[in-house]
Image 1 (cartoon, one colour):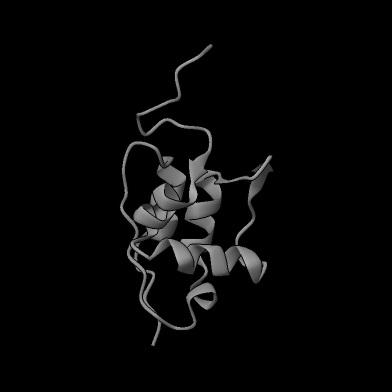
Image 2 (tube, helix red, strand yellow):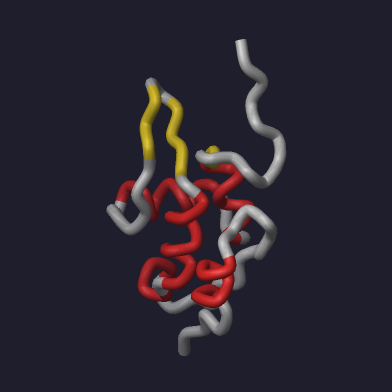
Length: 91
C-alpha cells in the first residue's frame, strides 16, 4: 500500500486542500463544483481537484462573483500558472 502525498506535489487535491489554496471556505469550493465553475475528479465518494484547475478557476474572476481572490502561490503551481494568477482583481 502506498502512502498519500503530503507535500505540494500532489496530483490531486482534496476539497479542503484546494479551498485553502484559494483562501475560500470548502463549502464555497463545493458550490463552484456544483455550479460547473470548477471541474473535479470523483473517485468513489471522494471529490478531488487538480492544482491546474485551482489555478484556472483563480484566474477566472467570474467564478467568485466579483470578489477578489489571491490564491497562495507555491512550488505546486507551474511558473505559467503563477504568471496567470498575478493581478486577479475585480471591481
